[in-house]
Structure formats: structure tokens, C-alpha cells
Amino acid sequence: MSPPPVIAIDGPAASGKGTLARRLAAVYGFAHLDTGALYRAVGLLVLRAGGDPGDSGHALAAARALAPDHPVLADPALRGEDVAHAASQVAALNAVREALLDFQRSFAAHPPGGRGAVLDGRDIGTVVCPTAGAKLFVTAGVEVRADRRVKELRAAGLDAIVATVLEDMKARDERDSRRAVAPLRPAVDAFVLDTSALDADQAFATALVFIRSKIGPA
Image (cartoon, helix red, strand yellow):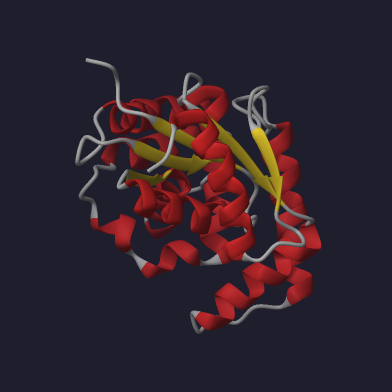
């Protein structure tokens, strides 16, 4: 029996990859895993325990405590900018990435429902699922992404200042792209989709043409 098809979607924060991943999963009837939520969950657990997200011991203990049904994965606090910053810190730690790697690969190999999987994150096509049937790298200009994130935060009832979010996003981009372990970059065989000038429907339509060329119609 052939393994279930996998769609790998990578890209920086607020590029639109999460929205795209959810829509593709719905169209194909595939299970979806937001791998960024795993790192956010680890970061949030460390913060709530009063630990340092940059400390390997604290972060690894939180990663080992994470399970698919852990309530922190559904916590609205995951979307906060302080948690995003903590997630970027824990994601740079090799021990944490190794602890969560099996979690992600198991999901891809045995997706709920069995039809296929869509995983979005920062190293899906390069590290987690390098043999995925379709790989997308979704990006956008940092100013565009910062504006999107501010709107998202305000819609959730959270205070957000554009200049602060922009600087935090630039720092996170730098940290994610320069980290020694699984840096953020497109896989060599990924389709790079720049959503700077695209709305969600346009991005989805473009991505769907590519996905169909790789794994066939839904």
C-alpha cells in the first residue's frame, strides 16, 4: 500500500500559509497540522511555568509534555505576540525540534482519516517531510505580513501597534532564517508563492493549480 499523499507548506509568519493549508485540506479531505502551533504551545508552556524559552532544559521538558490532546493546543493565548516570540526561541533549539519531529512525521505517515495530510510550518518540505508529493513556500513582503498580523490581533481583541509588530517580525525572520537547525528556506523543489499582492482566493487558486499538477485533483 502506498503512503498517503502529503502537501508541505512552509513560509514566514503571516504569509498566508495557514489559511491556504486549511483550505487545501478541506478541498482534498486531508488532515491538517499547523506545526507552528506545536512550537507556540511549547513556548506558552515554558512562559506559564516561569521558564526561559531560550533555555534548552525548560523548553525540552515542555516539548516532552506535549501530546495531541493537550489542552494548550486549543488555547487562544497561542496567537499572542509574546508566545510567537517564545516559539521562535524554542524552535531554534535542536533538542526541541528533535522531540517534535516524530510527532509531525507520525501525523504525516498516519493522518487522521487516512486520506492524506497537509502540514504547514517552516521546515516541512526541507526536514519533516522531504519526500512530500507537493511542496509550497508561501511568502510576502514583511510590511504586508506585519499589517496582516496587526489586523489578526485586533480582530481577536488584542492590542497591536504596527511598528512594534513589524520590528518583532523582522527579528523573528532573521532568527528563523539564520538558525543553525532547520533554517527557514524553500525546499529546492518547492513552488514559491508570493502573496504580497494576492488575496486569499487568488493565492488559493494559484496554489491549487500547482497541487493538482503534483498529486492530482481532489
